[in-house]
Image (tube, rainbow, N blue to C red; front, top):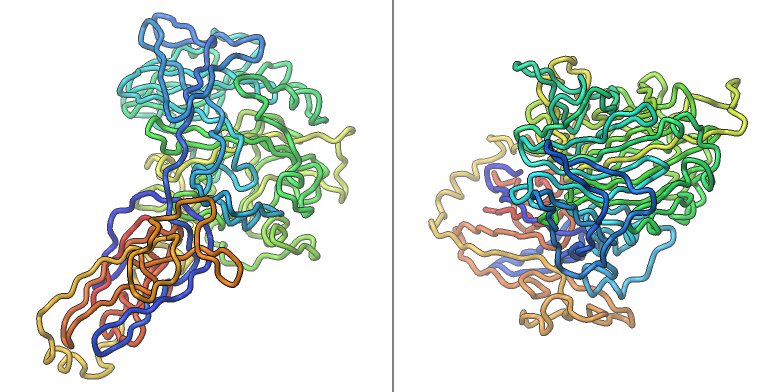
Length: 626
């Protein structure tokens, strides 16, 4: 982003964590400038722990066409996790077994150990910088990690199989054109597929019909609708599209699909088996978060983190239930707390339906700025600000979702890129949405005993959720959510100063020297005291268990510019052009402000966040010139 006086460079990935930064000062010869970092900030990132090398054995066998499965009757088996290595064992014909391991213990940075836990979990200073990307704030540890192999080295890769709420669950990756052979069709089970990356060919009439007569299924279905993820019984092989595919293959026993979920500790919900399944535990969301705004009948099971071979996030899966008599159903929310590379584009698939009309409720397009009312009116507290909200019913729609159905994008779709619209904080733009069950105490009778809706959430990185153009062509522009003033285009079209304010151009042009003074300023979190001598920190980065100096008896982190606090001096003569490249390593968006400068015709160099300067995203750079 940026305007005529600045440019945004390519990002590198960094972690997040929220703290507040105070301004530091630097000097320009003849003028004192204040360097202020605006907004919320975070710790400098480090490396995330790598998945272990646990090897899931015994669930994959081969046919001549490709990979096929045989489901274990017990809990499956898994090898021992070995730190800092990922191996991809291959079967005799070259098919790989997907690596499965428990999440590495400890934090991604040593300084995380000195920060106490937060109760409730909201606002935890360790999250998300201290944990792998993609894990939720209420369950940042003890997840299962599935690491897919390099598709260039393995045509077909298959994980071991879990049973989660009774559904057999297997992760599969295919190289371009590779084939996966599903288990033989049977009337006793139904198969479903949900794609994480790439596309699959001829898995039913789901997706788009290509010119060659083949159906191609993608990560998303058409926006503001739902489609069945069921694999037709006639499907004897599953072929990847030209970009390959990664997906989860479900098999649901028909007998279980016909069994209502009425108890979380018995029946279908309680059937949990597979590698490291002791980490998969149903708990009420109230218990997980420590916040009593949540109902005792709103449950969460977390979770499985799926990563690419290079460690990048592919998806996070977690499972949810809510009982049909819960007064606020699934909680109205819009993911405004998910920004930068921890944001996601979320899709859901129903596994067990509590009612015939259960599904997702979402605000209608072009209504995102309308007033929302709390429901019930006495809701308060952090979670209450977003969880128990109800919008104007005149601008809502409901998408029914029977078992095996997944909805399409509810987020704002960019009409040019067809990917999610991103706000200036790097987050996906969402309307308020929630799960609804379609029953209530105002005349509709509940089942006896009440039933639970059970669904699985797919939290995708935005780059994997581009909507095919053919899907958008079938819809009017109604699906395009908008939120004026909070889109990247709005950041780029900031107002310019009028040309006729005064004749400063003549004055400025008369004193220009033609000299350019260039410098690069790195904003980092460092373990060093305030250093008025502008000397480098004695201790690089934040080594040790308790980073930061002790200020008034409290150990505090320090944010520095080029390892100093205050920042180093920039020396220039009157009439010189100053060019400052700022690199943000502190975790969350920020800008740099120069006190005492008029910034005539260079408003983008003023650093007034969200007014004249879009914030510099973590891991990105911005060049100020004035």
